[in-house]
Length: 353
Image 1 (spheres, rainbow, N blue to C red):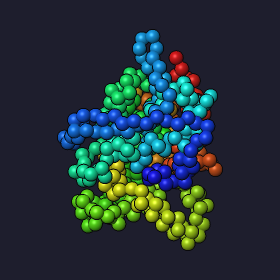
Image 2: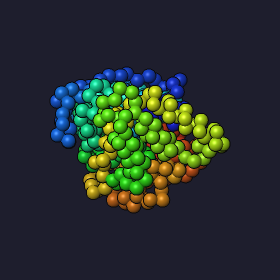
Image 3: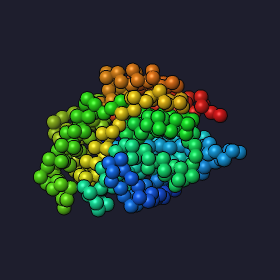
Image 4: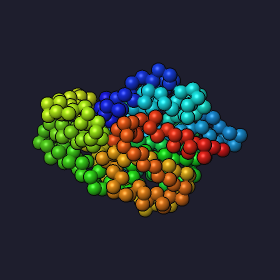
């Protein structure tokens, strides 16, 4: 179970979707993959899940492929449950798997793709978002033979990747939908909570430069920070309205997180956002883009005004801020498709060929 999956709303999303089809799974190995740091891996494994089959038009262009990218610490598995696949991929739904070819990659350092805990530990290349985008693109084009995307979308880190896809490959997609992200450098509270977790691990004597044999205690700090920013205060208080219940809530979360995660994997995943900054090139985005955030998101709070300011620079961009309600779950709203799927439907309709 990933960091994202430990959030209650996403746990519900992870439950099997009774009416949704089941994905096929595979691995694409990229030989001699170069990283922006100057490092390289002789074999970079990118795991993926797919629904449906690609369909080409008379010119040989794939017209039905959809790329959906996960958040920090997550994997494509977070989209196969009833809260996401069950709302979107079933018969007659917006991304009906009998009509669309849906691609769910595990990014570098995540899920079943190559990551530090496979054996290299802190000798694993220090990947960043541009490396992840490159690997995603090579999976899509070389591994799966897709030469065009009907839709690019993602949640949290995947939302940030969506902005980057729009800039780096502006003619490759018909539509873009980033969720729970802003198109600017990681800064303010979003940077600081990451730094707290990063510093806790890197400065922990138990980390041993990445060569530990048991998980360092600093992984607890990382887990606590993920818990802190992952949902909204209303849900947190409802679930833990007393001191004793609050302590049990965080203790259970941390215990589960430590059992299921690795300190090097967590450290690398948090550090990978260091090169993210789409702000200088937003005008390069050509495809219609609808960015969706929720007002109770502690990671990207509406008060900072970044999304509203920068969306004006996207030629065909629109921003949606979903208000706090009984249906939202802070940052985790990104995986609750029932809350925002009406906007996805409108975007698909507006970009239909």
